[in-house]
Image 1 (spheres, rainbow, N blue to C red):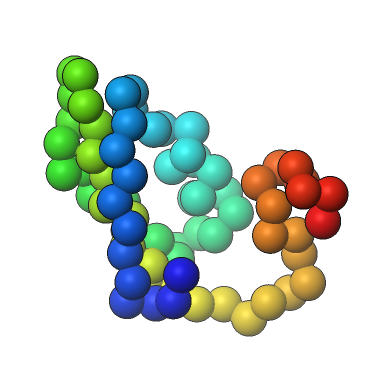
Image 2: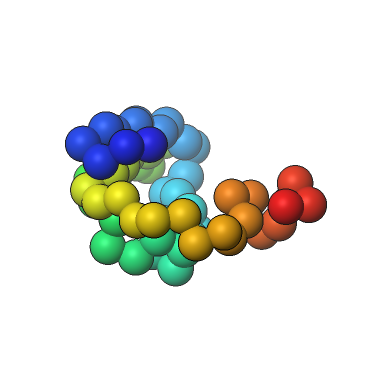
Length: 67
């Protein structure tokens, strides 16, 4: 995503692990806003606030793609 873009995720539970992953891998680059907070449905808007230069790291979640 580019700075200024956003996405909304919908889940059946609070996506806290995903939020922690965003914070650890891309600190300061995203805002996280709960649009709906359970108990049956969670909707979260994730806004890209900043871009950083590619440092040659893997784009994969946990290296799942082997990159």
